[in-house]
Length: 395
Ligand SMILES: *Cc1c(COP(=O)(O)O)cnc(C)c1O
Image (cartoon, rainbow, N blue to C red; front, side, top):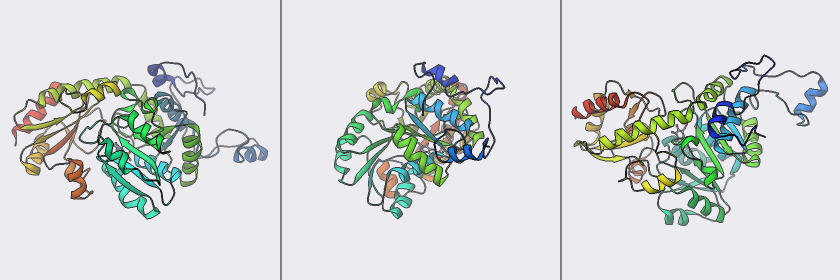
């Protein structure tokens, strides 16, 4: 896949990347709700199916609206190719199915998205793929977990919900020394705040559901990386297995990318203000946010990221009962597991997003009963703070 105007700046590509105007000369990107495409002749149909002539055939594997999103996201991440998928989980699954075979082994950072843990521990073992989990910041642990059959290192940074920050460049170097593929789930930062491919990662995973949409409307995902692994191997898996992004969702995400950097900056500013305030609140025993000087990887985050993002978590004393009181004490903040929305959201990870992993896995990941995660939205920060203050008073 080639990308138009590759030397343009990030903001320009976010607004214009991947756009192909039709004869109607529309200003905004068109939405092609068409499951299939027609051919001029039997010979053209044969040439398209045989791969001798480029062009659309069927929307399970190519659709112009989806392609615009793929090209735009690829250029923002600095990748050669992008494959859009029906969800973030479909992106991770398609990547594993395309690149791994029975007998292969994955090393994955602890504290990844709860469903990613379930995929790696409950589904992939049925197909002979095993995973070892390591703390994202335990570099000896990463090294020791690698076996001769290890093929893939998977990292989420900052981690969910504890916001631990891992050194992408270091882990990428380790991966390459062992002939492994290094994959980063870049959902929390997005390319507006972190570009893993520039730091040495091979592939980037997205749940477009989160910040790429940014307004909580659609579910989707993507894999970005090189032309061979993404453009051929993962695209081939998508074409056959079919976890395809719908054109409508691709259109929503494409428009979302236009405001991505402005939104990420505003999310980060609001989250920083809330974290600064929360760390001095008497009911709060701990605040996890990479923008705090007290965060153990604050220096690394400052080097590796262009901002600290919109997700923070904090602990209250008094276990689940106190944490649930805070959730229930909010009036404005939405009680929902989604994140990366213009609307602030609050969740109790131990009983929701991380409720289905075992107690041992939760303990090892530091998901305590008093922990709450806030996805800080774009409301006035004074209003978010007032809502949390009222909620904390409810303990
Ligand atoms: C939500 C999420 C996913 C999964 O994405 P879906 O679109 O819900 O399938 C994967 N990784 C992270 C970090 C997420 O937050």
